[in-house]
Amino acid sequence: EANKQLSLNLTGIYSTDGTLSAARTVTMSNNVLTFLGGPLNLIPAQSGTAFEIKNNPSTGDPAYSILKVDEDGLFHIGRGAVATKVGDVVIGELASVTSSTLLAPGIAIGKVATTDTIGQISIGLNAGVGGSGTHTNTINIGANTFCNASNSVAIGSGATGANTSVSIGLNAGSDVPGTGGINIGSSSNGRGINSIAIGG
Image (cartoon, rainbow, N blue to C red):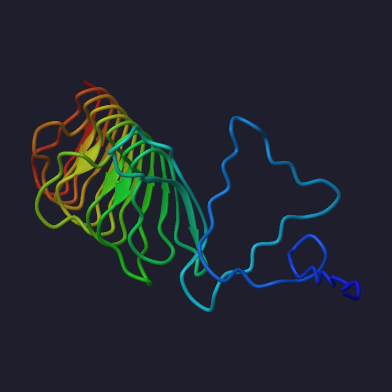
């Protein structure tokens, strides 16, 4: 019988461009995958997640995203971090933006930092946690800061903004300050309308 010649046509990614026909798993076995000599180009589908890294949980535990970048700009990084809408920026373990819009995205930076309404910024450990009521367009900066009313600012550990007030300092505005009030200094709290409180 005449010898038959075997022709091998390589179409994989190592020799030429190819198409991934189905999901595939690469088992690293504690090895490192390194790209040298050029940029790592990630070209997403027309819509969806551009880049995402998930953890490797124990058997039976669900995987969660630890880094996610959306093609349109939604971004979060950190264990259990959650961004909701395009334009949100979330950085930190369990940090979250749970409500936002395209025109008023949220920013949450810090462990458990939270924004739960539109146009809110929370930066610091537990910042934005504990607020209640309508508090759109508020700024919380510092550990355990939160605003209870719209258009308020709270800066400093434990500072509280309410009734369109500005509170700056340790526990400033910790009681409910007056509408339009300005509180500056540790535990300062002006209770009257358009009041200004400076000092403890």
